[in-house]
Length: 173
Image (cartoon, rainbow, N blue to C red; front, side, top):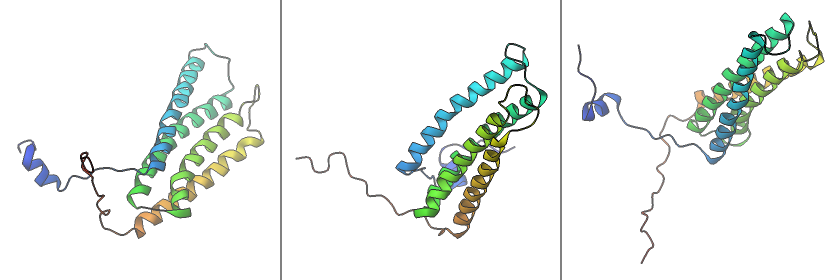
């Protein structure tokens, strides 16, 4: 049995310690995505209420689409958060950076909303025309994932240039 990694041995085993630095834009978008989890949590609460008979009765189709919308929202918002970190790690900029950072969260939103709105008609047993939002979201998701994957494969494999760090007392007389 090996000894637990502590102190100096942990650093030697793990290699260099890296600090995660997100761009200002990615930090703001990540905060918005984290706030969206409140809506996802409310969706989970709603599904529990439906399952326990405390909410209006849904058709099997509506229940299945509500579950699908809830699940897609949670998983794809998480993927969007991971995508922000990876886009910043590859230092994607310009239009490719915009696609890599935004297309996945937009796809998550469109797919979840599409599931909910396409099954919202009272007593619905099949999706209405708003099901197209699910397909548009899927295309957005694919564009974001492909852009990010290509960016990861083509990114230079070198550390980011060091930021100049000013002493808090610099310039103070």
